[in-house]
Amino acid sequence: MCFSQDAHWLISASLDCTVKVWDLPSAALIDVLAFSHPCCSLTVSSGGQYLATAHCDKRGIYLWANKTLYFPCIVLNALPLDYEPEPIDLLGSTATASEKQDDSMAIENHDERYESPEQLQSLISLSSLPSTRWAYLMDLETIKERSKPIEPPKKPIHAPFFLPTIPGLVPKWADLDEGDILKSDGVNEPRKIVSFAQLDFRSDFAKQLERCNGKSFWPAFEVLKQYGPSGVYLELSNLSPLNGGSVNLMTSFLRMIKEVLDSRRCFELANSYLALFLQLHRETLWKESRFEDILKPLAESQSSSWQRIDELFMDCQCLLKFFRSSLSA
Image: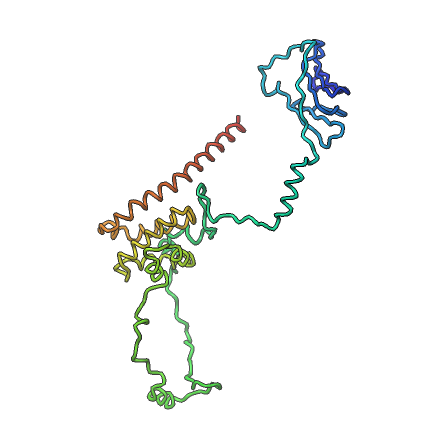
């Protein structure tokens, strides 16, 4: 047996597998707990919130909450003499036959590994790239202006002097006459035949965008992810017809961003690339009417993706405000 902290209650355990709570001021029995195994030890917490019991043939300690602390409206009256409590089942520590069978099946199937899907439809994932790769794309020009040196670089007083050499396994110094002979022989003359492949100045990203037209744009997006901030800025700038691009390339880029937003993957990269694209080509998008067919569904995809994240942010903010107000009160 044991007493509560205020010494108003006496809690006793008997071999009939019951635990009884006695109210000492009124000399009345107010609660009875019936178990399948007799209680061999019990105690009350210092605050009176919990009752801890230990039972015969049972491992572990069982905790029971004091309802009067959580429900103050409960009225404690004396129990009738013919009161029969409902038996309470104790959680067993030994495995049953079904649990043993499940464990054996788990051991047999331990070689089967679970492969998580790339993306869950109810979630939005990020690209795992550092924030320096995408967070400052909109302010890249400002960063470059601030990083410029105040004074122009100064020329060295004594400029280095390089002597011409004759190509070979063993380098040799060449006289001026020999250098003129080498030039006259046509060794260093540039080629006059140029292939058409050398005239294709498009980048790998632009070529991949053209290949993915009408297909999945993920290969082109993976190529763009490999560039740094300056490379991304240059690639998006070159999509304009004034810089060697075309309207078709710009349309393909917008379709690529829409596909990424619909997949709910790389959310921060897609929005950062889209913001930079709109900043660079807003005048072209305003003048050309051919972008209307892709801009409307793109805006819907972006708003639906952001709405899901905005709801989660609002839930977190409400919980944080509630916790802060509860702690400060």
